[in-house]
Image (cartoon, rainbow, N blue to C red; front, side, top):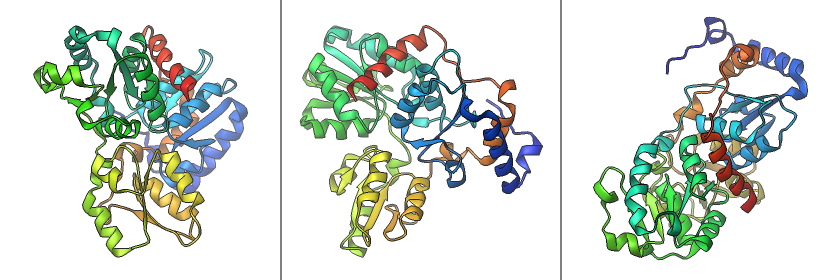
Amino acid sequence: MYFMLPREYREAPNDELEARIKTSRERLGHKLCILAHHYQRLEVVAFGDHLGDSYGLAKIAAGKKDAEVIIFCGVHFMAEAADILTGDHQQVYLSNPLAGCPMADMAEIADVMTAWEYLKPFGGEARIMPVSYMNTTADLKAFTGKYGGLICTSSNAPGALRWALEKREKVLFFPDENLGYNTGMKFGLQTEEMVLWDFSREGGGLSAEQIEKARLILWKGHCHVHMIFTVDHIREVRSNYPEVQVVVHPECTPEVVKLADADGSTSYIVEYCRKAPPGSIIAIGTEINLVNRIARTYPDKKIFSLSGNICPVCPNMFRTTLNDLAYVLENYPDLKPIKVPEPIRGEALLALEKMLEIS
């Protein structure tokens, strides 16, 4: 996809962009809702009507019945979920149409269907429950809904796994192997009960015996940002700051999560830092824009990135600028909204509604 802002917006200074955004917000009033993910730039977050993680923003989108125009400052799968959860009278726009998610692209529907066909002799939908992370495309959410599964986020993954294993013997989890494994460990699964399906290999690279014994079949996928954090980072920060608290996102590797003091969603990390007493030293293993914003919010605490000199930035989240937001606000009637077609929308809605119910 090729996209370039008109020169008028590319070259406008920030003070002018801010004034134009404020004018548009006043003009639209209650008809407008701007949703901003935690990983957005500080200046973009300032204009969000609601700030949160993917789960929190999905809930907000589902409840915003009076907002006719919803602008999502995030990535494509988030805007798709917002469109699925809102009514026909509402239009959802992604502030930067190039903002995607590499992890979501690691679970392409053709590969998923190949895996599902292969797993049919092992019980198919009678024994295997699909559970998809929010960080997936709409067609994978639809697959999940069609076969009775649900969507999870890092906020509710333990509850989603519990729900799934109460109903079927096995779970096929997409697409983040680290979140799936870390959640399985919290649930009490043994290492041998969790196997990794490598979509690039015949039969996922697994033997029939491995699949039969498994309770959790993990898709081979990851978040490149959270893979930055290592065991050595934790050891170094503990050496430099003996009193440090290390809190990481569960998309980090199991080795990192095991050594951390706590792990949880972006909203969990925000709350963890808020509750920490003044003078606390906290090293955070997640995207740098969130870490920097938390550090600015709580200057009475020493808060910094766990990765040291390596910058854990999500380039897709970083794509969205004030320039983009101003352009969408002033031109949305002429822009193409995010629209998930049927039957994908209806089937994906089933999975998303289950997510909201169990939470």
